Picture 1 (cartoon, rainbow, N blue to C red):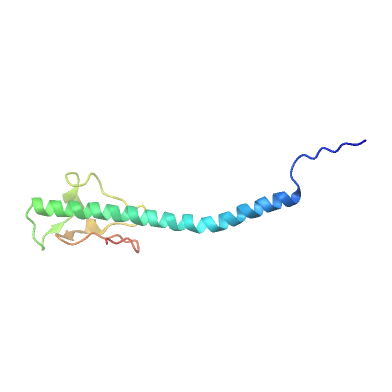
Picture 2 (cartoon, rainbow, N blue to C red):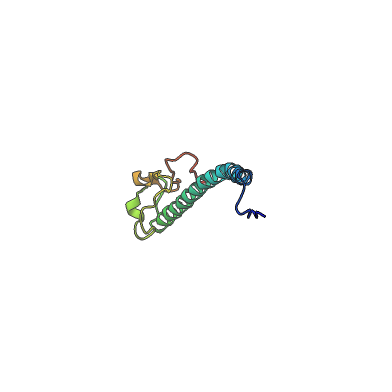
Length: 114
């Protein structure tokens, strides 16, 4: 009498498992990519809000009018610790100077204050 021990998986079972994993990854990957872009955008918008707040506080503290120019050097270190960096690689136009009351912007598309 010959006894056969069946241990392990059959080829069909392995192919089914690999197919299920592939299907799940196809569904999940675009969501991860979109989530990353939204996270970068939200982080940049938070930086822009902090810049706007610092500009407003500086303008109020120094009684500035709408024609006065505010640069990043005016804001550091008393109103902001350091120059913020866009997580998506964009740059903020604050270093060029902003009229008091205007809003900072980012060079990356869709990174805009609401």
